[in-house]
Image 1 (cartoon, one colour):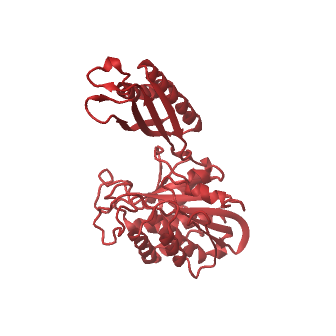
Image 2 (cartoon, helix red, strand yellow):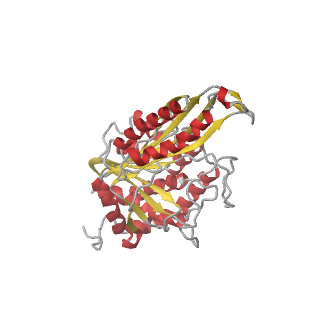
Image 3 (cartoon, rainbow, N blue to C red):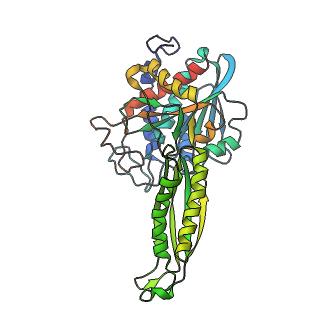
Length: 401
């Protein structure tokens, strides 16, 4: 369907989302004031349940987490479409000066998950008013523990997808894109994220007599360069990969050669084949470098989130759908994937679907200068949430036509 052809199923969606904006903003600010981390977000769960009260939804609460699954049955039978919003915050002290800033020391909604919850709740209300246009059911997935806690995997293990889901969709807000714009791409959308730990063992001694010791510090330092050289020489330039050594630790004082040095960091790739290759080559680079310095190294790699891969058809369709729902100026193809990671990847491993980004750069701020997600100063233009609500609803209406 051409983006210039009116779609009767999407007519009035943006206006409906706009009418719900006071409710959407109020819920967002309530959650923003009381951020919670990890898999247990009881206050956020309670706020979600209250926001959904009165709607004709079948609601199930998680057993191992404080997740919420709400199902809306359309007027006619058909498949199931999943819409997801994550709910957890970050261990960060907020410094935005907002009147509704976090009231919990050391906790902040710095990645916009408060907006995701609010938009998803309002989309449930918007779709309820359009049940007669739904041929099937909508599953609203309110998920804790996205920030490194594998919350989506827990929900899948509890049966989230057991009754069959035909398509899945998630939105993620970002402060570094023009407010109100929805952007998406087919194929890899975000990277895998694994953590590595290196333990370099030498032989301690006096700092004035290094020849009587086996110093692990030069070995550890050489490993940083060896890892980067490995990326450039063992991984194809056509296969993006990032390895960052984020921590190096060794020693206790200035005149002692330590026995042990450690390195810790992250591995990001955009394909499972490259992911496996980097794991293998990093271990070889570290162990051979250690041996060259007379030391021994142990490497452990902790698997994190898989690559987030949008379905080729759905990923492209989201771009077209956003244009039809809100106008062509509010939809942009996403050129390059991000090397950040997402646990919506677990859902997309099993269900054709897509994740898209929603721009919310603050008014009066250039996107190049906006504080990014995960910053203690990040701000989101709340007006963008109208477009997020409309996009969630449009995806379900289009899929269940």
